[in-house]
Length: 540
Image (tube, rainbow, N blue to C red; front, side, top):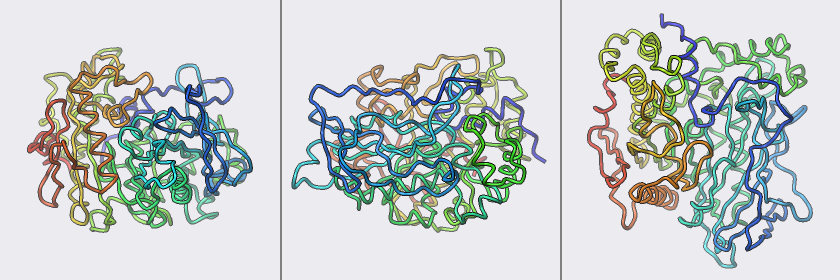
């Protein structure tokens, strides 16, 4: 029998995304408030755009135009809680799109108990201004799904304008329902609808909006690439096996999140047991949907998910076994049932340092017992061999970080890449910047972060992530690598092949051969030791 996870270990495993780093215990806080965004129009003024849904007024600096807070679905409030998203209603007259919509409800940081609003199903679009002119060729579309452990984050945390301008693509970022509002499952809710996984349903509704409206922004609805990180990447992995998603996107970029990793989806039966326990905690014995819809928002967000004392990689995850996700994605890929959509995926060399950093013992190193428990949880009966392979001579946190990197990120990504390569062109990378910029302070359990989880994001977008990292700290070599990465990503979005003029050659993976491109400042080349570096002989 596998050991129960200790509290520190459970926290470690539930921090599977950037948005969770700033998480805190919920305490009484101010009224709902959106994540602050810059709402100051640029000097060059505004831009009006007619879309099938109605007229939007956004901002333009002459090179890139930007529309924020555009509704893609009606508010999932009141009786619409835990129901499929309904397409946004068209409007008359001009609609302001100068500020981002509120994030979906989530725990706040510091003294703030709750941020967001249930009326949160909106998206943001950045497009090269030249794409809006008459006769302009339709551009590739890149749709970003944010991370945050399925419990936090928002599309507006990411500024897509530089990527759109520099790479001549249309970029969309979106919000989707999180936590219990997005991923609760109960017998009562299942009795109302054959499809649960409301957060994934929201993402698919946003893609339907893109298919209908993106041509007005200069985008090509027949050339849509999904890209995302952590929980966003896991979402994309799920959409690859979701029947309702067929035809809504044409390529996939998955960063640091593979559904071949354990715990990224769970069976419906398990999800409903958790949902029943949660419903009882909020006063709705039996999981009655009518009762759940009357529960105050703050109570839904503040109530812990039952079972977090057990091994739970994420507090709530997508559940397979409904119409949206009929089977476990990992099983579908093992059986060769992946769709023939080009894929680009990868991980960061030091993913685990972000998770062990906050968990040191009173500012010191990670307790040795936590490292042992982590090995037991992830390796089961093979734990003694794993502990021998991850010695703690350089520090317990260092060893635990390596274990997390290999077991939960690197090796599952390698497995998925080989499975996809059997049916479709697949490209794999490892981000290896040993000194990736960060605003995070070193700790006893993470004396250096290296290429930590989410550290590639400021390269992909070329813009800062508040309180986390900023490209203003790039060295010339790091800045050059960031531009190369954006070129690879955009080339892939254009053609399904990341290669292009001036870029080191990136060979596709084969079912039997690792072809991993090492992305390191001043050194972009094929890496021949990925499996050995990450002890993939120990991990599936």
